[in-house]
Image 1 (cartoon, rainbow, N blue to C red):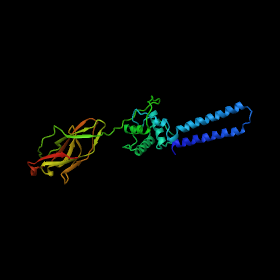
Image 2: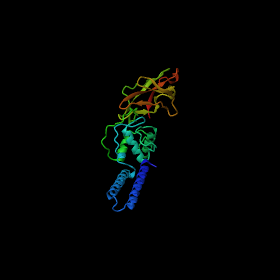
Image 3: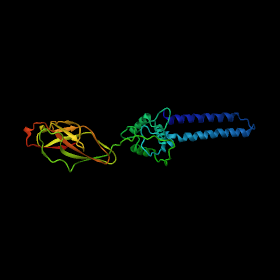
Length: 289
């Protein structure tokens, strides 16, 4: 049972109870006996009924005015405290996703994260991980309607660790200073072949989980004993991989491109100490995925 359903039943019970008091008192009134006191008591009981009815009306539909008046000026995640967290919890109680027996606490803990994730999954917000950021807040505003002007929170807030949002796009292009094609040679390690610029969109970091490299040019696969990715400083990323029957290798050591920046990553190759069988061959490496 949701918080608002329970509250409506409680208020309805109180209205019935007070109403019975009015009815019972009316039957017991003796005409002419202290009429003013009788009238005052009945008026007081009727005022109680009106107040309770007003509270019940505010809870109709499982959502009160307070539950749809949240205004968020920051992203909310585990560790956050404040009036905005309280408002979010009260809203999630109205939707049936926040069922903590203690009610709204103003602290964003694991229970609130689970409730937010359930609400996100139910309303098509992805990823549904319990982080109440810009996407979730936009969805909330669309569902809850207009919000009131934010007020200055009276409860001190605890700084939270920002959660990095994933960017919306990645641009990949051949760098102008890529290495020229040439003979490979013997006993090379990290010999640069092709430099690629990876540029992330400005709205978030991009994680490149893997790159697929294909051997091209006038050479055999055996020219390479392994392929590797080098970062901007020439440092090897992960471990080298050999070519498969399709002349390709998947280098699956992830790297991150920060929002709005470009990283120049180089496809490089290793060779063994005997290249006599491949003399004169010129290999190239191409990024295909």
